[in-house]
Image (tube, rainbow, N blue to C red; front, side, top):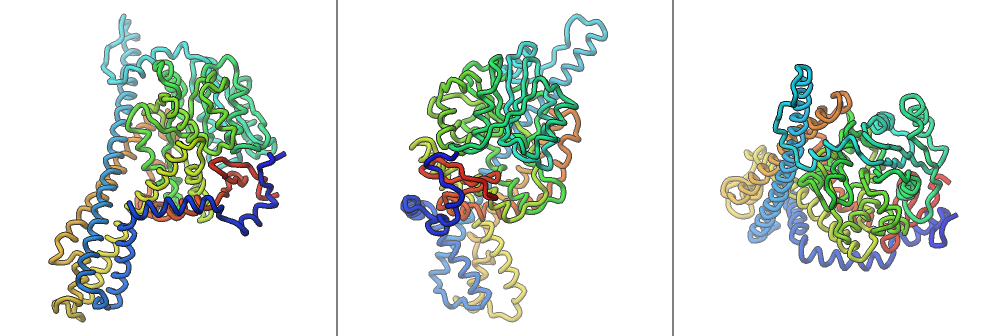
Length: 562
């Protein structure tokens, strides 16, 4: 039974057609857009539109329609836009280099740890009384965590599941196969007993793993929050009282065998830490299309925030390790905020941690391969992007609302701050080539209003500022490409150290870098438009369920196939 404030599916389609944009959203949007355009982005949009107009005039051989002064202003705007794009690309490059350096430290620590283990075995074989001391360079907390593995506290792993995906079985095997030197239980939570994942999961548990430590819980449909949050809450409340920690996991990532011991060890070693999180590293199947790579590219800039330090202010909902007592007894109000119209589990947790000044750990080893489907349709990609952005218009408090809406504007601005310069440089080079090919049939040296002016825009002789801005932009974007390439290699090396064999991450070395950058460009070009549509529309479909947001909270609707 739905709550009184919920809207039945029978009224969804008529309401969407009759009044797709609530007036209060429209009024707030107008205020935000006017401020943003006037103070931040007006010159960028104006410059890009002018550049497209000039490009069209150049192709039509109508340069005389613009005055020479207009040409000078346009040239200045385009150069400024490219310099701004160069700055953004350099920031990305530095972030990916920093992220790679932090992961590289973990690679070297694991390699030194393996060398230490081999030395210990060799010393024991020859009857040595002590192990050979080898400097590992590991953080103090990680060393303490490693020494305390034999006395780890109880742990409950909660995994919300829905449907059977291409890599579900591989992911479940990695999650159920993790090592843990302490009491451990798994709780798989699903909405319905008719979920197609249940027969496969039940067979896997009965054949290869201890059924006594694994339960399957039927949570039923949610009426006041997202289905994932509803499943998480049921799992947390069903956790064993003997557990000290509860780990909320997504079922679409692979975990390396030592992750549980590493995560709990870090929590035990740092008494000031409230929780621990991680982040996925997307891997596309061989033969994946551009839209799959566009979905993959969405996570790449966000990976930086989860890599620059061993603690963070951000939370990823696919991996959240909490003290069970704090969650069950509502110490910081997380469970209550989830229940009251919660849609995004991780943004709510991050907001509560910021409100109460709680420390969030994010160790370098908390990174997980996440495989993406080889083929995305436009409809699938649009829905994927909408679900990622929908969370930014959901909030649990006024301060949370301001932060989320600020992030919306920053996200849009940075996306087009990269896309516009790329487009302008490509157009500049393309039209320059076109002019040079048509050189024998044109008068190019006869002063203002001739093709010479257009060659100035394209970066020809006499326009040193334009050439310099284009060169700097290409240097910056090349740096970003090389930085991402290097960071990807470091992450794959880290997976090779953490997983027992390279087979578990096969496909990571088959990245199609052309498709990746096409996807990066496409995703950032579409993102502001999708953000605007998502802000205006209160509806989103997730897992076969329509959600309706109002004042930052969501209400669950009936499945769309009923």
